[in-house]
Length: 58
Image (tube, rainbow, N blue to C red; front, side, top):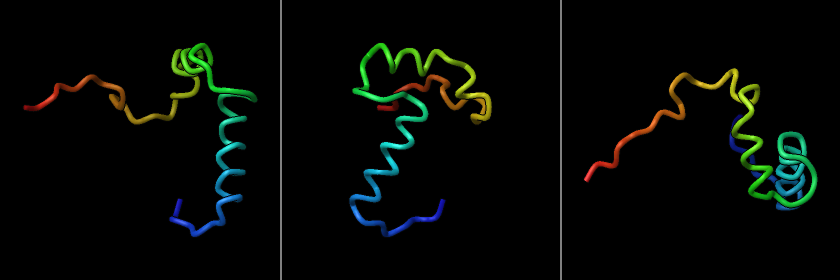
């Protein structure tokens, strides 16, 4: 998506719509977050190894 200069209200509406689609209505609880990340279907088009663990470089 290209960067857009949207009004704040439009940004909030877009964010709410995306959240409602993927997480559901209401507050984002720990249970909802865990359910989302444990559902493989949401990540079927993700880049391979996107969630691979990486070490912290010091």
